[in-house]
Image (cartoon, rainbow, N blue to C red; front, side, top):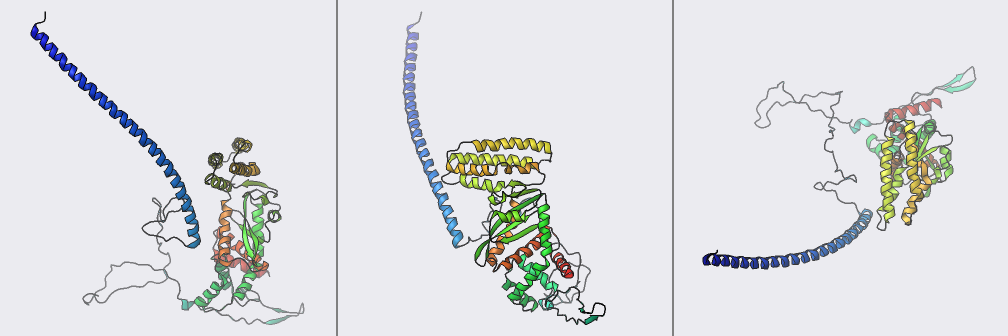
Length: 479
């Protein structure tokens, strides 16, 4: 039995619990309303963020477009200033200068010392007190060139006897050694002019000025032209040998670029290997020139997708760099379709795998198996039905080249790209920008012959001056 006091305590406790329960309900309702308000506010903010992200994307696209236009016009008008505080990065993302982890290249002390000079003081430069000599020394090596006053030209007069042969009843004359027949200038000058013109890309007026400033020798531009033409005649056999070597090489490259002759547009063709470069300047870009250059050729020809090479009777490797460049431009265009973007990604992945397989040890049976796999991948791309015009254009390129994109798999040492030819054409492009081309057909031929021989010597890492002089001496001795 509960007493009245216990009953009263229980009632007060229940009343207190009822009040706390009511308070908790009110607090719960308040928190729920607050949570609903926050959820609604969060939803509103998410909508605003999505809207801002869309606006940001549009503004970013517009900014990129404006930057491209700015860079285009900026390149036409002026060049950007270079700042030491803001190092300019290359396209690869690397900063200029030495990279972290690369060994530095410092001054190497020459092995042969021509002069030894002992420097010392007799009196202190501070207090003028007398100084005695010691055995403690520091060494400092300086490399210099001869004084320009010591570069005076050497003039030699030859007294050549006119002799009579009693056996054949003819007048004969001696030919001095190391002398160009019927020329007023020697082989040393001849070699330097050829190197300055075709290796250092100097214009004729600068060569003439250099001879006058450094050697007190006045030679007109016309005389330099005659000297270069004589170089063409002397180096013609070497020029022919270069073409023969290119044709017989198991792996060769080809490319072409424009060249001006007498104000008209001609074409400079390049055929090369890893050891030789053959240039020829022709008045057409027709397929007949390519066939004439590579007549009877052997091995694999790596080239771009220019149709003029398709008629050459040899195996060919199409350049992946050109294909990926075209697909990249199409995929990153402002109006690019999803199809061409996906196709570009597929081509990049295919090239990465193909390049990896081409760098593996060459096992023909394994390479043939790889070839069949990649051929199926190309056929899948060719047979795909694209609706977007930009994707169709890239598909057409792949269709035209087809298995020529895979030839390198079956031949050891054949690259997937034509980058070697692109690099070889830089010398011609730089010369074209400096000189503007040739003034005559004979001048174009002279440039092609001399440039081919000098670039080949340089490519083979031979001593340029000595090798070129030997070529000229050998040719002069045979004439």
